[in-house]
Length: 101
Length: 144
Image (cartoon, rainbow over all chains, first blue to last red; front, side, top):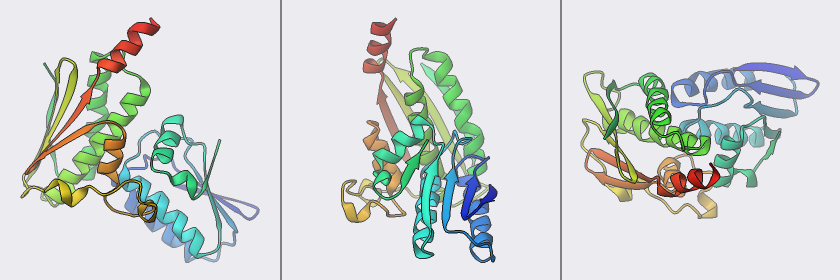
């Protein structure tokens, strides 16, 4: 997972699959970000390179959304494929956060 | 007709290696299959195999998971067997439309698989997922 800080927007770019074998290292990265002194008011999870996803990966997205809420940050997902978008809608996650192109 | 079979070790990395091989085998055999169906199969296989590795075999390196995919017209059968004690269907299925549980962090996968129109049969430590391909094949024939 790569991070880019653009103004007050922290963009998290996934380069590996959003799958169970990768989620623990994503969580480690998040822990480091939220305990650092990086200043941001918005988090965007960039899924443009993500092809594979499983329910552990979905749980990671939900956890990130909840963490953003806890820290009073805006959260959205961008670049998701049509299939991932359809999955999030099937799970009704689009009721909770924005999913942008 | 068996499309794919393998035994994998009890790790998430093994699941990540095997699922693309399984979906590639299906894609090669069924040219009519849409990318959406393949995506759903990819998601479903990861879910069932991850559960077998984690909750069935408890990541025990001495235990393996068996994965077999068979086509019996017009259905695909995915049989996943671990070496654990087995589960009951009521242990994993929850009401999908309960608003309070939309953000739950457990038991999402099986309900999503059902919502994707897979059928699930659980027999102790074996899970059988069934996908009827007749509609997908009919759509493809109508379009070409």
